[in-house]
Length: 199
Image 1: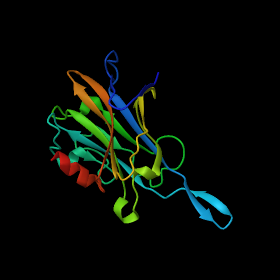
Image 2: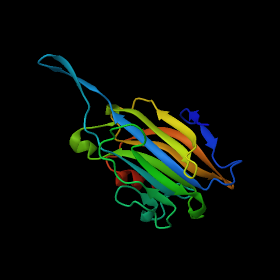
Image 3: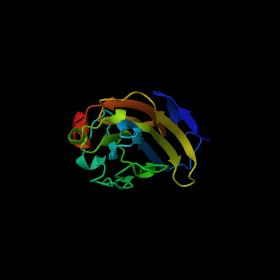
Image 4: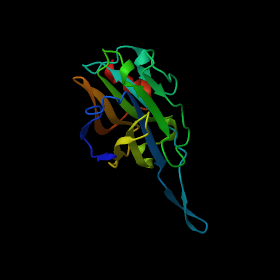
């Protein structure tokens, strides 16, 4: 059964689920409809926005220890093989997840304490785009082996002016793994700029 989270809420993922070793993190978004005045009244259109999901594998003190610990559209798999990206979706159109990140908890290195999941808008500054132009953004966490959705967080804040979103994190808590719904907007036109905050 899915648990719908609110901003800042945390949930145990593995407690009571000893067989849960593989997670699927799904991210989805849609361009918001824009109204513009045309010859025959108002017309609706949606901007062409390319969002990119990424995962930052961080140490206990929130440091990105190796560049290979940034899993994104240009580095689809971490060096250890524990985190894999589904590949770039250029439009965000259609129902369901736009991009997915798979996490094999059994392979996550001991020096990785959390996996931060972020989304950036590709060429945000050149295209003059921000997350105020995005609707229906969400992050969900599922059991990859069974397909069971464990948690979902709909990002409903006003993110106008923001070019990056820290959606949530999967982190260690003793021998267990938990999920934290973050929903924080940031100014970072590229994931590499965002990653520098954690070096």
